[in-house]
Image (cartoon, rainbow, N blue to C red):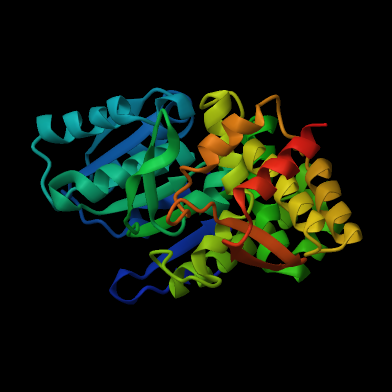
Length: 372
């Protein structure tokens, strides 16, 4: 893919978190002019971490461009896929850092999707108690969600993202041109996280998504640019107000709408069987139907939400997983407190809240009815 054509980027967004504030740069072709953007001086230690799918597409160009600016980059290429988001794979990053005597001024560049971003961020947060890292997300899901906000993690066989840290990147550079090479299934997976922002946090954005989903499906550049930017704006605002997800009402937990059900689906099926966005899409539909069954939102609003998820080519049904297995995995969700499952439920389109008052028995009854 040719990234040599650079379109002027819009004004960078800012994730405003006191001394940890950073910019989100969005535009087409930004990877081809990365060295001036990241403002790293010649001779600095840089480690590019990517995977076997992304590095052949963009990595060699990126390393060559850094070299022109006097920056020699060490390269670490990891296996691709959610199934490798584990201790064994992240250890390969640590091995490279240790073998090459990398110090605390070394900067990691995470070139890839959400799996790479999460693992590189986790490695950066723990190597020598913390080194800088920069997010270079190349998938839609990573660009609109996982690259922003500083959540880093690896998976455990018993739960997704259960081992990790809050650790903010130094910078996020979103090159929208990389999306043209993204397989359709991966692309649609990212749309799920865009829909999340409209459903849970911004009804006007939901209305816009309804009117423009056909254009987004067609990868229309103008529609994509707005969808990505608006998603990042919403997430940046939420993260700035609740960096460590400590608010009991509202706050960062609302970004997990659909994720309690979704993570349970991912874990139960086996990491990689369903893509993250596919599981979240199903989880959002389930959370919507559950909100409706509790009288929280009306049937017409629920129908609009489910219809938009379907229009994006994403699943809305619960896959063939037993209710007991779903509840077992949901009981390990990171939002839970004192053994109580905490769900993100809807009060209306664009309005959601964390609910700890729904009993396990109510969830069981709903999932049982849903499977029928």
